[in-house]
Length: 451
Image 1 (cartoon, rainbow, N blue to C red):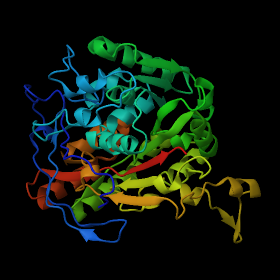
Image 2 (cartoon, rainbow, N blue to C red):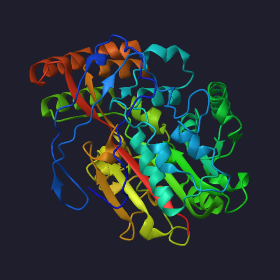
Image 3 (spheres, helix red, strand yellow):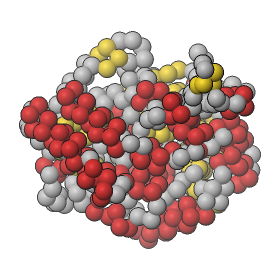
Image 4 (cartoon, one colour):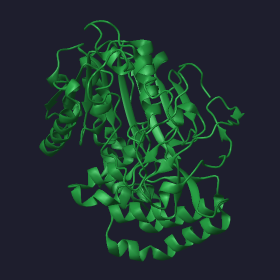
């Protein structure tokens, strides 16, 4: 495990859990996951970590609430976040105060169970976001500690391709102003609606958000050069022309400004139980490409890029300090191409007739390739590492049915019943408690610092 970026001990906590009663559901009664297998890290050392992640699922929890650091009246004397955010305009943010605001609470997290609100969701992309994991506080730690170390300026953040605008509310815990952009009018409208409702609940953050309809490749059209402190792309880099996007974003970044890119695998994997893991893989194989097509569309180029995790994204050394660049994988065991591979895509893009490829020269030239080189540091974390907390949950077999039902049709659920029953029976036979297994989500992250 890398120790380069130090950070305080962090437990992932659902901010609204204190003083509330969890709803009754199969998943709401779960406890601490069992120890997961050793994982090979980027430095080729195998370590065992005794600290376990504690999670708790609740059918009433949804992905709409990304967790709040400030509630009601802002009191700088009692609220570390308020103290940090009420400091003079150009004074550096007290990041430790913000990140330690959960101190003293029980280390529990409610993973999203989103079937309950499926009727409120208007598009596949929003369904996908709600069906996936909630962004854990460890991700905030990873990104913001990096930004603090290399920049420590907290005036302006840009959330590119923001979609529903959910992560912008997290950025509001750190930055004085957040600009949200999306290439579609519907994306901007959805973000505005969500953040308008957010402002009504958090009046102390009113006025922090502005919006524009721009593609990530056109980021420089919204800002003066060198004015943005942090630019972040969540779950959408594979839809872009990566070269143009990175250069356009770089033009807007202030010296030492941070580029952060995050994406996660559209389906989870079971950790620590090989029998159930194999059955779940059979389930997902039988399910087909539906979750992958929601995650990365049906466009071949987007799927080919997603196939590489984030390795297709260039970090040009004329724009970024390459020795400061971090390519991070979480629960991907340093093999993003294995974990992000779109099912069947390799077969479709490598057709041969008489030993010759049927792709044109231009199509072959356009196939994305890895842009990783030796100047960049690659780091692998697993579910037992502090930087990976919150990407692992303990679930019952019904969790798999819930996600399929949310993202697909009732006919598909019925078609997959034999596989779901197999998963259920194997959990009952092989799980230590006969009820649950540990799942984890594979994640890829790029962090880069502007020259």
